[in-house]
Length: 248
Image (cartoon, rainbow, N blue to C red; front, side, top):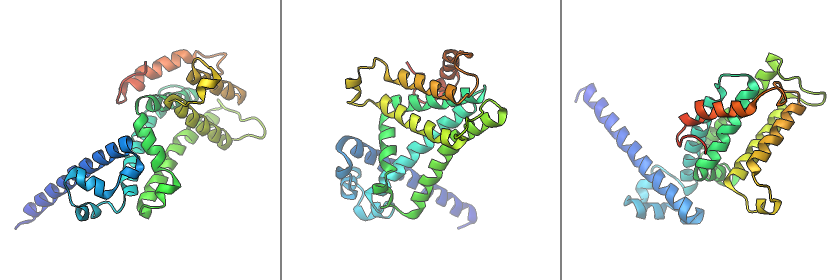
């Protein structure tokens, strides 16, 4: 058998394994979302796919590995969307608005993906998977952090942001991450919001975020810039190009 034949067979085998992985992960996703964490087991997956348990264990050593691999795919997709926002043409604050709009869109249209991503990133799950998978998750978290922190630092370098005394680019980055987490939670819907009786909680968080950035002196200030027009451009130039289309 010549080298070309070996290479072809190897490539064919690799494609087969990739298709098998995709099948297993898609079915595991459905079990997790519709039946819950405790219903997702290797035995349950074997029954649903027709593969034997030993065959599945050759690839996945636990249900936690299935969940983390699903979460990694969700994280990679979100980061790709955020990188699109990071390249939005405009000033750094506009790019930060674009990142917020992408997160808002993702939480609105990909609720299941966000649920998987949040669950897979818990210590309870990550401590049960191989170190290599944990490292991959950590690396993705660092990429997400870098996108936000890099935008803040870009504003400082350009002179658009002069952090007030007692604050720093890092402290603002931390606050923005917390805001984005809250935005995603509100976009998914929280039962407690009914008691606040706020007509549009997402719009309220965005308004508060602009007040925060104005307080930091991050220019252009909302009093001197049409951020509603910036958001319209973001929807047309960034959101519309994402899977799922534009926000309503």
